[in-house]
Image (cartoon, rainbow, N blue to C red; front, side, top):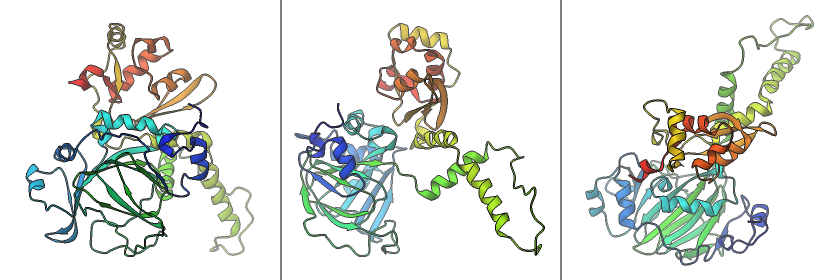
Length: 391
């Protein structure tokens, strides 16, 4: 699809227009973004997911037994939900797209954005009055109403040091003032886009209120600098050190003079300013799986010949739920395929195929090196046999 074609899910804006005029700049309310939308699961199914081991879930009670805004973390016992009041609480379940294929399919609608920027789809359920309080997120989010109604109020962009309520396990803003005109009730299929740091408050208006939050990864500067420095540090030789050959005699031996600081500055900046290394680090960081324990490596190394035979007999591999892929060209023929935090050198067409939605069947064997790379990805858990996931 052309990036200049109008997209109903963006209110008729094209991808080009949305990214140029809206993305990370201002909110956008899109009525009927997904016409006739049917939520892939209901409140009971979401609660059931929150009871499963390994699923990240939270329960927020505005008037809990221990005080206001009490937060409990899953997995939950089913009895918990029978004890809750009829209003003023919220269940939030993270990464539902990892467990429900129909939810994962929604991510295809967001292909106008880099796939490696996508984080996950969180789904929240709340009876009337349910909320997590006015707050800000430090990432972009699309809030799609799945069922029922939710009222959204916006409070504008807030500073990093905006005061928050003390003594609770939520970052609720101490002050929140609704901006004129930024107060809506969303119906199923309506969607609200919010850029980072935009104050918002969502309150359930019905007993079947489900909201899907499509969030995006955005490493902070402190995380990025620390991570990149660690990545480089693992590869630098011990001989790369501060050096001062040809320096002038110091006027005061105890002084850290400008020349010494300049030499150290050049050492650090010259080491960090390596585009090739930056690309390798960035690809690994942005494909790190959200939950590492979801990847299940094979118990024994895969025999390449057996893998080829299975594919030729009609079997198919699929990308593991929660796995992340991206690629970057090294030259006209080769590329790095980034898979779940790893970087694998391979033929460029193969990297592109594996990082997209191309079926992983016998046809892929026509690409150079596919058999060995598929075996490697199967061994580390980034791929699995389709039949095994269906069981």
